[in-house]
Length: 240
Image (tube, rainbow, N blue to C red; front, side):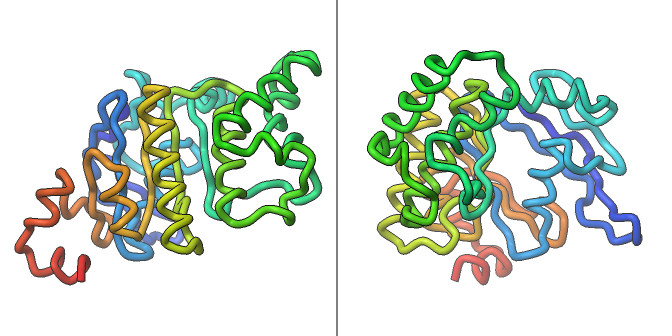
């Protein structure tokens, strides 16, 4: 279970980005965070990762409040999380295989054979076992996102997956294939997933529940059907 309790976040210049956010994400579910640019959805993801410290409230991961944790304890919590950043964020100077095995090499004491086995296993899972020796600039946008998913899953076998605009810049067909992969990974691996997106089509395709942010506050929380049926003027404009 992931829980945000009365979470506020304010930058040092006094700009407040999150206001009294209360949200629970049950184990094994997929939540989509929607909202206009600057509405707070990506900030909330960074708070969950411990990259930003909230100025108020608690952030619970499996019952542990991560807000007061020191870096070592936070690092242990992060090992339960796989993260797919916008555009994939691959290392351009490393091969696909080296990208996928990067965190295994940096953080785990595995021999070369085990790292190669895990790397190939994850690349095969995302349908890219043939790309092991390619460089990132030889991949399409969709392939880069798939490699990013493989890298996120390879090292620590996460129980939580976080996606920041995973289909940004992709054509609709490729975006749909990435959404299918996100749904497949979540279902087959029994993961808790949070996806930040501005694309309603993607949110409806992958999410069990949706949260719509407006100016740092949760404006709507519910199912896809409830959002579609909403008569609120702001929601209707957002969906138009």
